[in-house]
Length: 310
Image (cartoon, rainbow, N blue to C red; front, side):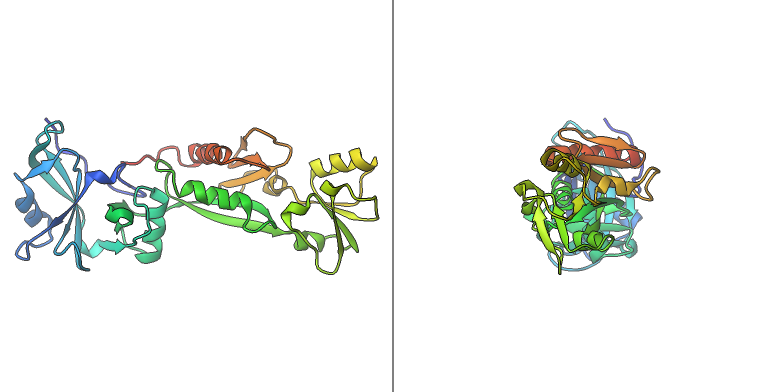
């Protein structure tokens, strides 16, 4: 037997599984209001996984939508009568959006669709990939800054983070924001006719200047290094000295104090481990997707510890 459930609320409430969300066609003579919908649904058999009902006039056409929470007589029987109905969102605060490419099992995807297709709406129901339906209440994704250096393009760490956010179901809604520094902007801090970059693989160039690449071990020249501590170590090993340098370590850009927003960054001195501090997490320069997964979980544990899917 079950008891009446607490009405869910936001911000960022997302059902754990969209199989718990049912779409019901409501006859025209039933107003999409709490009392009328309760009378309509009470006593009707409901599948044991159903916790929420999206009430609509026509499931295949635009129109008003109400979002409901239902309780059944039993959570173990395959089908059992509905014993309680609570209104989560009335039609004037609920939007139904069709986004065929959206994976509605991913909280960040739901938040992104809600904010772009139905900005300011409290409850957004999304019909997405495979025609699966899910919803989010009061979408307020947590901004995560990715501190990065480019090239290469796209910025590797930011691209990896977005790829992971797009597939992880148990992270809170996140908004990934790149904060990139360009190599040519770094070079402008110390003008030179010849620059040494860590590797050719990044494709980095400085317009109007000669460029060499440390990984090719070129003949020593009068250059300025655009690099970091590891690059300096390699330069000393190759040539026995240190050139003028512009340090581009993304981790150094986070600074000694807490960053203004949760930040992911990287450092070449980290080879196989993830580090974290107050408001930031740093990954190895050559981070794997598993490193990225660990970093995302760490930043969420620090900045949104109370969130969990409903």
